[in-house]
Length: 208
Image (cartoon, rainbow, N blue to C red):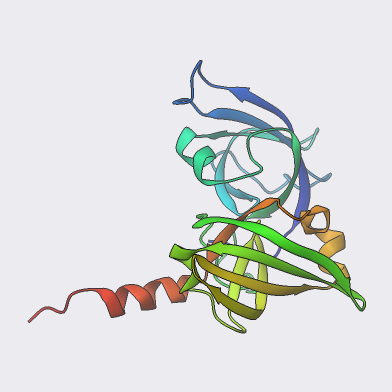
């Protein structure tokens, strides 16, 4: 489990194919901030842009680790198939502060940035969300965008989904990769965990 509070900015420096066709995944080499891996063990979970991955090799002195990502995960996420900056979060401990919200690290779908512009000292981020996720998004509810726990400020329903609006403060822009977003870019989305269970309870067939 995670909280959606980014604990470091990393960079994918190498994306090595694990096979000769699209049925194979990739091995990613990621650099982390100095000291970031000091308390990480092989097999630990680290979220990359909101997707939970397993550390398969570590070089603590160089602050470098590797993960293997499957073709299935590559098909359902964005920003994890080539070199570039990524948001990092280590799995939460049982005694950690829950500064964001409960995040599983399982990407539910991809959204598309429709607006990213300054508003006062902050920036407004609007994201077009696919129809299968729209019913889970609520005003003042939580959503995870590229691994970052954020609060929804507005929701506009559309025929094929919805457009949500989020306010990003300068601290978030400076300490995550969200400040690099551009209109038309895709982002990883994870809906609120509680909303997922509520939907299941309401839609499941009743038993005698």
